[in-house]
Amino acid sequence: MKAVLETISLLAILSSLTLFSAPSMASDKTDFKVRKILDVGAAPHQITFSHDGSRAFIAAAGSDKITIVDCQSLEVAESITVAGVPLGVIELPSRQGLAVSAFRSDHIIEVSLANGTTGRKLTTGVGSSLFAGPFSDDLYLIPTETANKVWVFDAQAFSMQAEYPTGARPFPPGVTSDGRKAFVPNYDDGTLTVIDLWNKRVLETVAVGTNPSGATVMQDDIDIAVVVRGENKIVFVNSASHMIVDSITEGIGVSPFSFVLSPNGQIAYVNNTADNDVSVIELATRTVTTRIPTGEIPIVMAVHPQTLDLWVGCEGSDELYVISAARAYSEYPPATATSSLEKPTEVAVMGMIHGSHRTSETWGLKEVEAAIRKYKPDVIFAEIPPDRWERAWKDWSERRVIEEPRIKRFPEYTDVLLPLKSELDFAVEPCAAWTKEMSDLRNARIKEFQENPKYAGQNSAYEHDEKIIEAEHAANPISDEDPLVIHSDLYDQRIREELEPYEKYLNDFIGPGGWTNINDAHLQLIEDALLRHQGQRILITFGAGHKYKFLERLAQRSDIELLDLKPFLTD
Image (cartoon, rainbow, N blue to C red; front, side, top):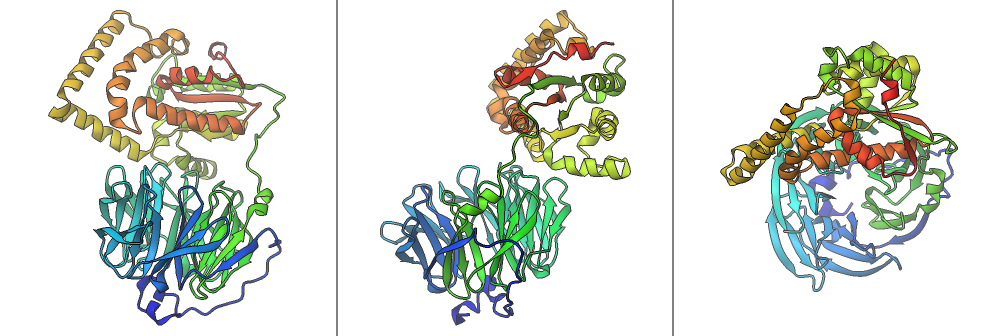
């Protein structure tokens, strides 16, 4: 290694590694061809692409420069000098400049693409490394190793939105697709710091193993892949429980460093810095299918969003590998429908009353069970968050208990759905977009709406409209526990009227947990699941208040047959 790098915290850990030959594997490597090996400067680190995909920006840490590569010709176009050991680089939303993190500097630096001059600077402390993101409108996270903190960087405004404490020596984090939650690996602590970005708080610190060097949120937001470098493995941490639920060791080489997803969710890559290769993981089975040889110490990777080529910066040999991977994707075709399209997709929506099922004399748990048995679903789309379903089913199927706190609130699931699934073996699709972070944010914003004098006029109008509707409905009462009433147009119309003020005044103010917003998110999960279950008989079980929203959207689809649930509610 170059002497200039031996004093750098992030890089020095590599200097004492012994290099090993990668073991041979049964899978064919011919799907991965090296297109080009480029000299982009010493110790290439973060690789990012321009917004249009035409250029790549590589932080050459050992040469104090940013190298720009033309992605079509795969030739170096130019380089820009940036002192201080640049590790991280992104193109700014203006497309006129770059943001660069220089590890030995204590700033993030704005660099002009037109003339290479330095512009604005933001203080971070010494030891800032790679940018993680973008998420939520040009926001990025950037860890600072020596300061033990992670920053939220607004690339549009070129400002810091927030900072959070971490464990010792934070490395690049993973963020959920909605930007609500971050997972920061702490290299020296062997832990993962979990941050609620929406409510601006650190939630928990979780032990994951020796020297975690990277965290990547999987595309479904259910699990986080954490590279445990000191133990040569990948662990998967559930995003809701923060518990380790799975791991990969076979096929992972010595000293893995990061975990990078392909854009289409079929493949992931792990760079093994002491074996000088990359493990290719088939995500459907979470198995390593092959190993791709690279230059020495492959330290950072990126996948081009259009070509799907894998770009690998090799710190030990001062090389950038561009590896064609397009052929490999034919080996892992996307998931298709689970059943024949010769039958219609039958869908019914069952309105639940949650805790009231325990006491209701007309829509109690035994009536729910009878209706489900009579309907005979192939699949139930349940009001269960996807990141909580696996734990709930595991607890039930193995020990006949439910410990997952969210699902314990719904007796229709704990007392009916799970026992019936064991007996009747229908599939379950968890389709609730609810998260605790969303719920906490909603509660905080409602409180602000009610108590902040700034919103007094709007709150007064909201309460006025609510009282009018409440009085009208009180004068014409209906039974809200009769299943035939619940599954009627009259019930849906009344719920629509009752929620109209809430939707009008608070949906946008609340944000992700607003009434329209959360129902749209539920429906996105439902519609995704419909694609997986074409030609099957589907029962959607959600709180009765959601039913009118679902029926309105589903009625617009020509590829399903909406069934009236009433015949299944009577003897």
